[in-house]
Structures are given as C-alpha cells and as structure tokens.
Amino acid sequence: MIEVRRLVKRLGGRAVLRGLDLAVAAGQCVAVAGPNGAGKTTLLRVMAGLVAPDRGEVWVLGEPVHRGARAWRRHLGWVGHEPALYDQLSAAENLRFWARWSGVELPAGRLQELLEQCGLDWAADEPVATFSRGMRQRLELARALLGKPRVLLLDEPFNALDRQGRAWLAQLLQARKGEGCALVVVTHRPEELAGLADCLALLEGGRLWFPEGSDGKAPTPAPRPAAWRT
Amino acid sequence: MGLRRREMAAGVLVFSLLVALTFAFAFDPARLDGRRLMPGALWVTVLFSGMLAVSRTMAAEQEHGTLAALLASPVGPEALFFGKMAGALAWVALVELVAAPVLAALLRVTVDRPALLAGVLALGSVGFVGAATLVAAVSLQARGGEVLMPVLLVPLAVPATLAAVEAMGAVLQGEGAGALGVWVRVLVAYDVLMVALPPALFRFLWEG
Image (cartoon, rainbow over all chains, first blue to last red; front, side, top):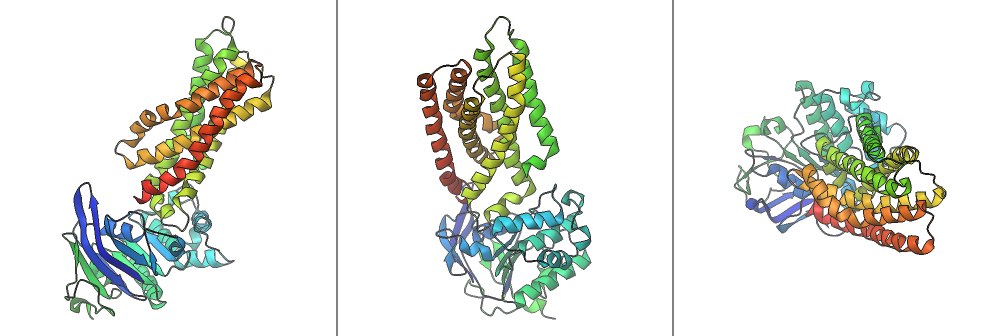
C-alpha cells in the first residue's frame, strides 16, 4: 500500500532523509520514532505528497505520489502536527467544509456518526475556538477519517489527549487497521502504540532502523518488537 | 471563510476608509479636478487594503495548520489558488464598494458611466488579486514573508495599477473608446497572465 524507495530529502542543505526504504502493507501499522529533528515529520510530509523528494520514490496505493494523478489522495487520511481546523466554524461546519473540499459525500447520519465516534456530538454546533486542545485533536481525527481512508498518516496523534482519549484513539486505529487500512504513525512515545503497531521504525541519521533487525524494509507481516508483546 | 473573520473585515474596511479620507482631505476639490484625483486615490486604497486582506487570508491557513490538509486533499493546488483568489476578490470588491462612493462624494465626482466604471474596476481587480495571491503564496514560503509581500507585489502590480488608473480616468473624464481601449487591452492581457500563470507555479511552490 505504501512503498518508499531510496528516499533522499535535503532541508536547508542538510540531508534529513538519506536513502530511506519503507514498505507498509494493508492492515499494517508502522510506528516511526526518533529524536527531535530526525526528519519524522518530513518523512510523513513526503509520503503525503506535501514535499517532493530530492531523490527516490514514494508509491501509495500503486500510484506514484509525486507524479501523475491525485486521485489516490481520496483514500488518504492526514493528521498533521497541528489540527487543521477553522476556529470560527463549528465542529459540524468544519467537517462539512472538509468533506466538500475533498469531494467526500456525507450521507445523512454520517456526520452525526463521526461526531459521536469522536465523542463530540454534544459540541457539534459549538465554534472550534471554544474547544480544548484535546477536543480539537478528536475533531482533527474525525476530519482525517471523513473519507474512510485506506491509508492513514498521523503525526503525533496522541498529543493533547488524556488517558481516556488515548485509549479511545488506540481502539479507533485498531478498528481501521482491522478494516485493512495502512497506518504510519509518527510518535515520540512508541509505548503508546504497543498494542497497535506491528513494527517500530527508528529514524536516526536520516535512515530507518528496525530494532528487530531486517534488511531495511519493514517485514511483512511485521513482527511486533519483543518488548511490546504482552 | 475569510469573510467570517469580523476583526479582519473591520481592519480592512477601516484601513481603506482611512486611506480614502486622507486623500480626500489632502486635496482641495474646489481647486483640483476630482476626476483626475479619484482613480489614483482609489487604486492606492485598493492596493494597500487588498494586500492586507490577501496576505492575512493566506497566512491564516498556515497559522491554523490547515494549509497542509488542504494540499493533502485530492484537489490540486490550482483549486486552492482559485479559491483564495475568489475570496480575495470579494474583499477587494467590498473595499471598492466602500471607498469609491466615499471618494466620489468627498472629491465631488459625478460618475456618468457607472457600468463602464464597474467593468474597469473588475478588470483591474482580477489582475491585481491574481498577482497578490501568487505573491502571498511565495511570501508564505519565505522567512519574514509578510514584510516581503509589498516588496514583491508592488512592482509586479505596477502594470495593472497604472492601466486601471488610466482606464478609470478615461471613464470619469468621458473619453472615447480609443483612449480607453488601449488600457483595457493592457488590463485584459495582464488578467490573462495572472489567472493562467500562478496556478502552474502553485504546484512548484507547495509541492517542490
């Protein structure tokens, strides 16, 4: 579903990603961890087609990300570092706007279902400006799930969520994974993904390292690191 | 979306009124021909207020973190350009609707051909807004972008501004099709360039 080949990306003259390979299959979740400035967000942005690579290729759902049609993006769910929400709109208006922008049809009841799923049905008509950081993050996740994506790229999705929220999100992502969605989750705290991720990839020195040892590609099916097994 | 930001609407409208009033009071309409003054005064108002509005609407997308999500969607960056341009055109039209009657009243100008004047204003606005949207996107990528915007935009908008001032002057002074036609052709050519070129550049700007 996602294939990254020999990816090189320089930012400000510094090679942030140096010939990086990664493969994520349907129904697989890869957690990407690493120190600050390692290039985790850059990797995610390249995979989402937001930044072009200097060398190498990224393929998502059999389509080259940086060439050709954009139709594959219909199946992409993206959660960036900051929630992509308009403060002056209500939660429901935000979801309606993003559905229209992305060409996603919202059948009757789908909006309510999404709001209920993220625990915000009671605040559907409240302006996002009044939301707490945790509520914004929940709505942001609802936004990313609007089109029932087959690929989810998430940058620190557990940020700002309380314990209950983190459990809710883990359950939600597990369900998406079970439906065959491929997930790449950038995180500072890989332990939060212990029950969810099939593979931990450490980004350091511009390359991905797989603690269990591999040939540079996430094994398919990827074994869960021993330390995570319960 | 931008029209929902009341503080921005107030800021842009107050600013445009202030510029219009400053011009109106700086020149004595009893001594000077208001029809010669009004085009320049109006376009300076449009230029500064429009610049303020366009840069804020674009910067707000980045501040809200919505820019990446907009670009990650199946819709191309071209749609974002046209969406932003349409929003900015609404702002500029609002500024013109407020500033033009104020200037006309204070400079004692009677508009005999309002439809023609509206047409010239529309042609000038499309080119200017196209250029402003492009420059706002470029500025967003640069450090200190909001400072960079006027430095880049003012020279780029010179052809549209000059042609719009001349065309508007020709309309207000009742000149014939010959004098007006030259400037209208310049405006049309500039508009075509500023509507066709930026969408192609947007992809390079944001997807590298």
